Image (tube, rainbow, N blue to C red; front, side, top):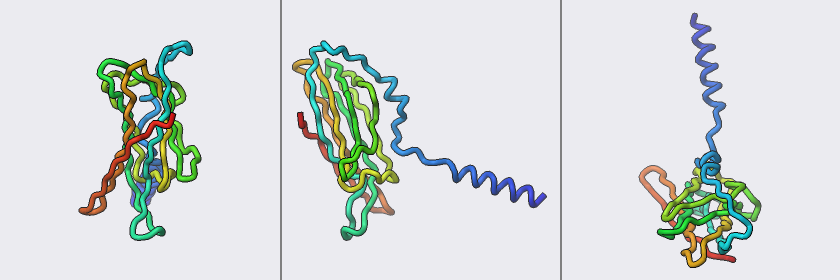
Length: 169
């Protein structure tokens, strides 16, 4: 009986340890619920924005890094118009694509916010990670706002800071 209990406990531990933690807490199913069909002849204005994000920062020296959780906020600043995000691509320090968050345009209703969370254990972006967003908005609509909030807590010490995107096109 003792051997059976030991074997059962070992089996449970093996299966429990094999479960991988999901990297980035935004489920792709959430993006598919926001899919928008934009017609080519649409009179929407195109824009492109760059947002710096930090998956890691240097601590003490260039040889020691500190991991951060990053929250990327995609905000529709219009109180009357729906806007469209065509692309949200995440790049690492070397400019290589780490992850593309959706393959079809999504919409944000007036004053709506969508978020992308990059977990603290996800260090693929490194110390110089960034996002490129492409978007379309109706004429005379305010541009979307893209912000990054990075934070970490270790023991009783906390660290947080923010970045804002700049329009590049």
